[in-house]
Length: 235
Picture 1 (cartoon, rainbow, N blue to C red):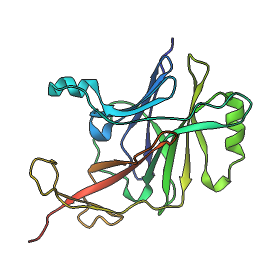
Picture 2: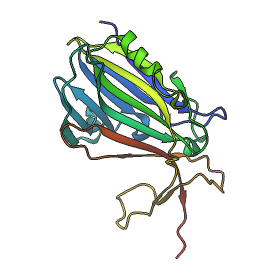
Picture 3: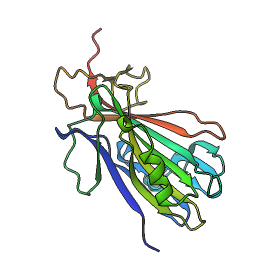
């Protein structure tokens, strides 16, 4: 069986980018890993409908602890072929204004997704479908042109379903977040973090921050990724 490995990042012409995201599969099981957490957590989508956000086994082994699951839910069943529908399980959103330039050169190649215009966001979705690739492409072509809907990958699974990974632009800036330093020491290796379209110290936003929704059964998980920098609190 040929391996499926898609690595992608959202990029601006000036070199600013998101974290690198990695989608792979084993049989009909699909995994999404992101380097913003250094291989600490991953999303898993298992047959028939089980979804998880959990610690990676590699990190658990490194820490000498049992693996733990942060969140678990059940997605809707994939519609039958001919319905023209697909089931979204993950939606990633990255604001163009807060992509980061303070990254080392990646040792691994990745697919560069063109970032949305300034003051907008780029969204990447992972869906399950039973439609063929031409049908999926046709539906994307019929979407509004200003969304810039692009098919990144279509991959058939062993159980007859397929995964569809696509990107599009949204008109929400998604570029402000204020995270005061934890009151208890040891809770974070960072202090006060700020996400802002302004970067007065020209840090390059070296810290990528990822937050998640809390999906219930039948929902998809929404993921927001930001570029942040640390500020010194004045007392």
